[in-house]
Length: 275
Image (spheres, rainbow, N blue to C red):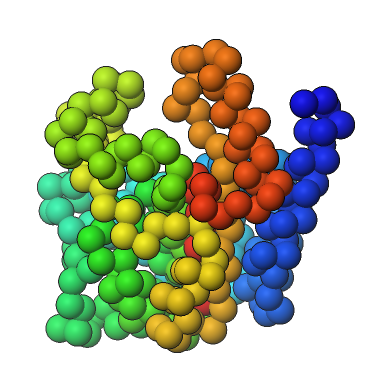
């Protein structure tokens, strides 16, 4: 593929993403404004990894959302520093008290199960302005319930964000099919920091409703009552970087999927909702 073909593919992909997630409304406009300020390619998962935190902070500031809840942040939250630097009140959630115990002294925490019954927790009802999560939803056994709980947690006008891996990208299909112990062993071998004693341990993954298809996700999200829904799909990963030739071939394939807006084989998705 020539350089001209690469540029054309990037333009096609960006056009596809813009048309597929375009909706009139404040949330759509804020997301579009942020993306316009950042370098591309906007379809590649590298963009999502590089700009996820900044996008969340941008939305918090755009809509004046001072209270941020990081869902499933555990020992490795993303927003403890960046959120505070932006003047936000940051609370870290996890189901496991042991995970929260790794946080610095004085950190605001909220221990609860995101897929649990929160009706008995009036302290959580409309308690936060923005709820964000990174690589959490794939570990939840009941994602529709999680989104209903996000709706419960948010104040009117609040924003929820979930960044997660999607099916049917092959690394996550393999992860889903393998026994948990085998999958964890492979990840720990490839990425030593993912060991049980490391800073980012591996947890079992379910991939419930983890897809890049906006049509499929909206069937789940619209009945919950969110006023706006944005689905940003991404393609590409670096799992095969140690295998020259194969890595480049797959990169070209993902570029083609992006240019065609092929949601069946997205690698990651950013889902952004507004209550």
